[in-house]
Image 1 (cartoon, rainbow, N blue to C red):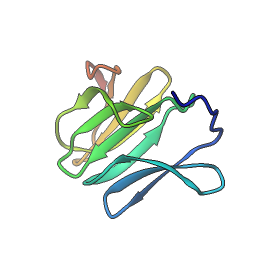
Image 2 (cartoon, rainbow, N blue to C red):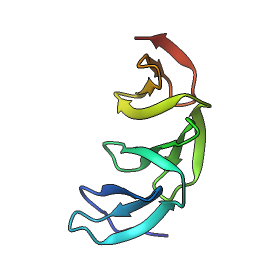
Image 3 (cartoon, one colour):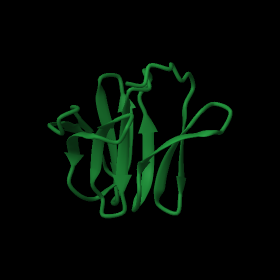
Image 4 (tube, helix red, strand yellow):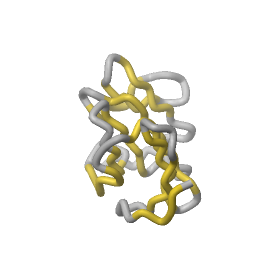
Length: 107
């Protein structure tokens, strides 16, 4: 088990691949191999939101293991918003969802 505490980790997307970097820029690991268009790291750096080119957003652990699918399609961006997730859709609308993907409200 990895016990090292990485403070201020960085997510970097290169040609659709999502890498987790240390604050000095060294690659720790690849989280997703392809089709990534957006990603966000939780404040505790234990969860990652990954938005793919097909519009799906997954909530994953910091190794890339999927915990849940937050939205199946039309997403272009997702960020952590307190304990929930704020999704921006292709048409510009926004949705607030819980971490299991349940829709709370449209914004």
